[in-house]
Image 1: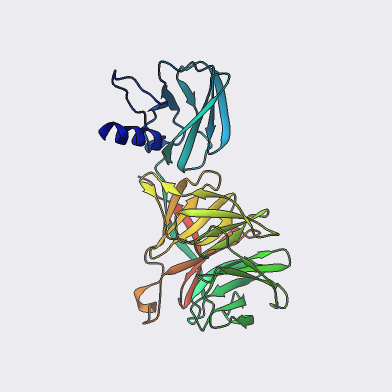
Image 2: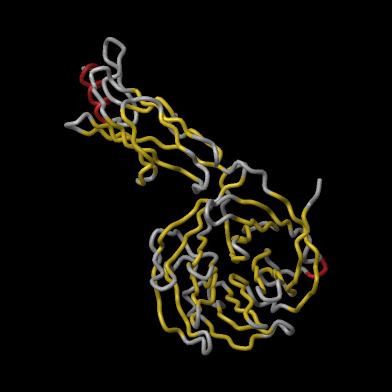
Length: 351
């Protein structure tokens, strides 16, 4: 009975090598790297296989997340670089060929950030009024006014807002069944997310008339949204950032976000600034500055105390909302039901 059980286990577990009575492997497997082993981005990964003595392997092809890495003749160690890759879990596949048959084995590693994020404090440059009924979920600056989307069931809205007065120049309210989230301007359209309803809306930017809908695919929820000029960039409350086709709204790729300590989730409102993604971290006073190619958090901006205690009321909520004036090089921030919106400059923390 024990021999039958060992045989079943050997056949079912593809990532491990079973041993025969003489101590030799009866199946090919990974000797290196170990399953789930962590590597810093930029570090080389060494791959070594355990191959049964009775297998005559002519060639091995390696893939990473299904994409070819390279091939080698024979069974020696193989190394590959990780510089420029995105972070998170990666699947390594080895395809062993002996001329007549192929054997495929896989293992997983984790790529983590290998840099210490820079730190920024802030200086308030200007202060503007902000509507305390605005549960701010999306914020962008366009030509002297803000595009702002506000959340909560029963009071979600999409607005064009005057910078100097904080008053809505145009506004539409969403049906009470929807909780509005991030929004962004793409050409003559506004794209708006909802939280848990698995649907997004598009609107005419001039009239705010709804002209389309789309559904999410693999992303869990709708949180933040921004546009880099080519792709929509979406957060879903996890440490994953999704990249969507600007015309079809299909999720085409993603990066997982890490700092040097591990994954960083609760990524909320987003803004694309000079090639980087700025993200509010929900329930904190920190903004993460992220490399969109790798998911590495390169810096944190700590905005603790930006809203004075005397200006916090019973319904004042957390920091959320980042907007960038590309022409004037001005950075704006606010929060959910803040009574103020701030123009700030970031100041590097020096040790």
